[in-house]
Amino acid sequence: MKKPDWVIEKERAKRASAAETVWLFGLHAVRDALVNPARERLRLVVTKNAADKLAEAIAASGMTPEISDPRKFAAPIEAGSVHQGAALEVRPLNWGSLHDLCEPGQGAPRLLLLDRVTDPHNVGAILRSAEVFGARAVIAPQRHAAPETGALAKTASGALERQPYLRVKNLGDAMTELRKMGYVLLGLDGAAEVTLEAALEEARALPLALVLGAEGPGLRERTRDLCDKLVKIPFARDFGSLNVSNAAAVALYAAGKDPTE
Image (cartoon, rainbow, N blue to C red; front, side, top):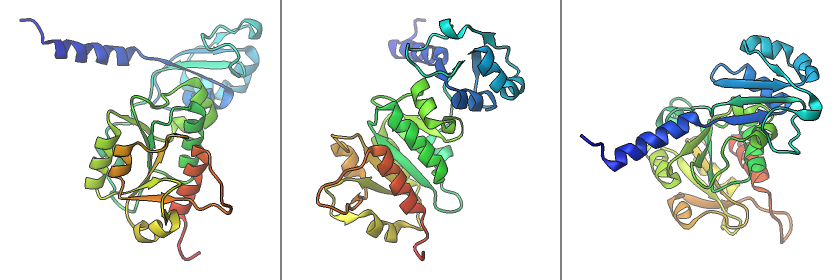
């Protein structure tokens, strides 16, 4: 019996996903991926100098590195990438399901939701801030969002290995599911009338998801509609704006701050 077309397409997509690999580069990104037991590692290319610097991590990983001439670096990464003599081919990390990762449990977890933030450097910086300020996860759609790349990993400076970065099929559906789990969804919008600080006074003891849009277009209409409130980070002057990664850091810091301080 012939399989339905949708079954064939689903199986093809699953095989393609399993075959997908990413080249990480840079000493920090490669070192942290080498010692991450959850990371499936395939090929390690290093110069002699980088191999010496990564000796402990390489030994811990059990990998046999390929030693490459620094003038003709053998890893298939973009020309001009600042690889510092180290590149590692890996499969993307699997962080599990939205429900398992974000179920509140004890305390009041913080999440960051990214609506079409496609710049890998911004997402890498956001992952660093999320790790520093204790966010449970960073969540973005599978399409129109920055995937795991070497540039993202290098900017994240190792945070990609430790900070959950969950890609979901539909951000709106994920927001609806989070609300059912008890999360309050605050969308950052420079034109909002309510300040982030005022909204946090009401939501600080609750599970909280901070929703940020791409620079320029901001939050999409459906994303805005699904937020419980739109809030702004006030500026000291009449005109001001923050890079999305800076806005994420400020918002996370504010969300974790003790209101009595």
